[in-house]
Length: 303
Image 1 (cartoon, rainbow, N blue to C red):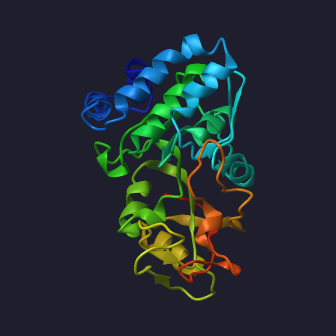
Image 2 (cartoon, one colour):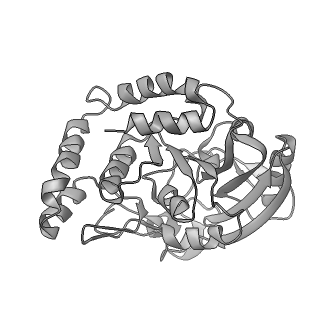
């Protein structure tokens, strides 16, 4: 399913050819019916796409079988996938203020179904390797790439710490919507640093708390109905984390409040979304009494 031959060539171009065998073995073990009860159904959908593409109604029914679609939108074979997130809006905000991606080798950590990875390729990246442990997202990417047919972008079923070792090989590393899910955010930042070559750029997007002081807080149970949110910093605190982790040239390039027009339930993600996570009488707060989701994008570099 994953084009391991093209992936091996990509590793070679990054002087990481010694990674190929271990990563292929781990990826193959993850992409099996033994790891998820829906895997065979998903694989059947991928296999059916070539025949289904001749009829948009049949194709739409097949792609709906890969719900929920969290990131998008996509246009695949005449089918419009209106995902939960209008990820194009975030990309428009981010892409204008980062180092040009033309000719760069990119790592996208927590890449989801590869929406941003494909946009990075459109922006001229030489190669993009995305990693995400959620098997459904990997299968969605395989469906998308059935149409895109790009042999220089990959989504692998891995976590950052499962890469074989420090790479110091990527020109740009993205970590968007990942940091607040980490039990140890400092460790995550250090792992990100170890992926970047000298003068490489980190693009970090995460939730933050309002306030001028440097502090962070941990929700006692949930934040905006999410159980796996571990530590929410102010921007001042986040900047300190980056400095202590060895980053320099730290710059805030975007701050925004997440709007329900950007994250919402759709036919392609019919479960509760952001509007159900906000206090009904005060949408500036979550239902748990926290400030409503605010996101910051920061760029930084390494020596």
